[in-house]
Image (tube, rainbow, N blue to C red):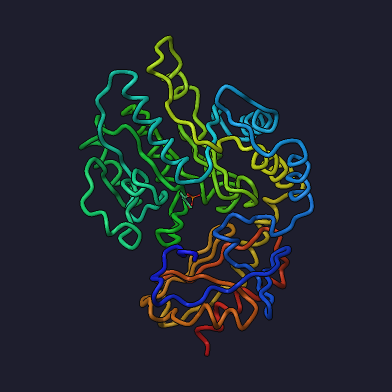
Length: 395
Ligand SMILES: *Cc1c(COP(=O)(O)O)cnc(C)c1O
């Protein structure tokens, strides 16, 4: 049997069984649902997009996978070149892996070894309170979410700070010489509660990382490819290492990338074999994943996705304007993300089924009811999603 994620198997509701999917819609045997979650935020083009499906089929007719150990191939070469051109600054060195968590692991390993290679004994990481960077051990270490990680107790070598400039300055003043990295989900913290903050914090972080020679890592697994209303937050403030996942392949096949700048790459580039990055996931650079990622970026550019995301944000602001309820603590909107935070998590109990009956798939967690819709959503469909969210409080 399937052991489902984040669930108490004894008490969990039976999952809705999906028998078909197309565009923004998921189909169960007897219901048609708008996927307001984009399958954990990755399905930006919706389901069964002809060009993306075709890219996978075309590559499958050649070969589906070839390892990158001692071998290389066009889909991986072309994707690394495309990312080099598509990403800001000198984020030019692309390390592929099979999931966001692994790509964050690789970023942390890069940052640590960058310092080891230059003979530095830096032993601390800086990260944010409510950070979420994945479910593997090192990512849980820099993460800060009781509900995901409570089982693992005290952590060493990591400082968590809120997204306030004063806290940032204080942390650097105290420990700046010991930080090998500062890792953040830039502008939008997803799984930690859809928390949004100002770019001024990131600008100050860039200055302090430069002053203290600390590597700045942006985990854009969730925010990359437009979700915040920016292509990448890295377009506003450029990190030393950028992590991409989720929407990288349009959500069609799990894949991720850890992209380093020139400075980081140079820290490994030497005549010493022990300075090499010792990492190599079996499925890194998978040919099907790279092919569909290339097609996804092509559609993203050609069909003005940034314009679509601006429209989603404008409609969301219009529809949520004036919405208030005694149970609601805050409504937050940024780009293609809207979150209604309630004071008491109990207030959202039953909402998923309520939404299901009204043709929307939603998956609230803790105190957060949210939507991260596919960018191809029509205005009427988006309004339907937002109405269902508001209607819950107007019963
Ligand atoms: C989802 C997510 C991850 C983990 O990615 P997986 O592909 O699920 O391993 C890491 N960081 C952030 C910010 C995420 O949203």
